[in-house]
Image 1 (tube, rainbow, N blue to C red):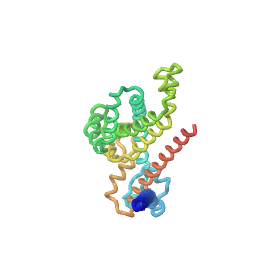
Image 2: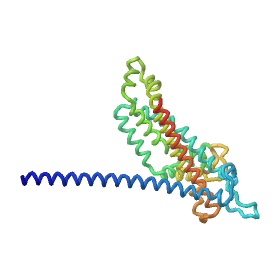
Image 3: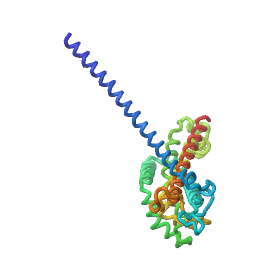
Image 4: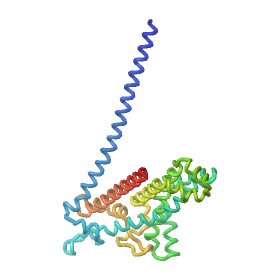
Length: 310
């Protein structure tokens, strides 16, 4: 009887300890999730309040900010007053990101197909760590390579100063390849095996199976990878800043220097006083980047939702 009572006591203690452990784990998980939500909302509210000061406090019109190329944030009243048109920065970011993805997307998709469907075992064992190594290289290294190799090459063989929209596009196109390849590989590998077996059973060749069956079936993941790559390119700052020239004018050719939103913010933030028009405008440019991130997230959710429905 004593042993039975002792066993029951041990069992109750173990059950009580398990219940406390579950409660602790659940509360810790909830606290971590709540912290992430509060951090995200705090960042959004902070950037929004700072970014809107340009329009609410300094009375700059939204049209002037978005569609003007005049950038004289410290010009005195005698010379016409300050102007904070950010169109040059916005154009630089959009042009650089879109052209980079235009180059990297086909290359990345073909690489993903090769890794999943064509490469033998040794090929996958080499490609997978190669892609992971590319994604792990710091952006300053990409920028330094671009500054040391790409900029002189463009200057000597294509013309111009070398610091150009083309240099920024090429550096960014390499940087977004790991993002697009990784998502595309996961999407292709997640396809059910019976799709391929059915295609082969109907007499399709490997190329027909890839082009007509696998790629359409994985299109949601492939498009998501491209959008993520575009978001990655839009938010990159340091590497682009090192090679693009940082000239506050819209580039009329690939060999012209220009500037992006991220470059403009990082270059000017050390020279502005908090609360000044110049400083508030930089926050407004940061708000544009934040809104673009929201847009990319919504776009990914729409793509995934449409893919799930079909």
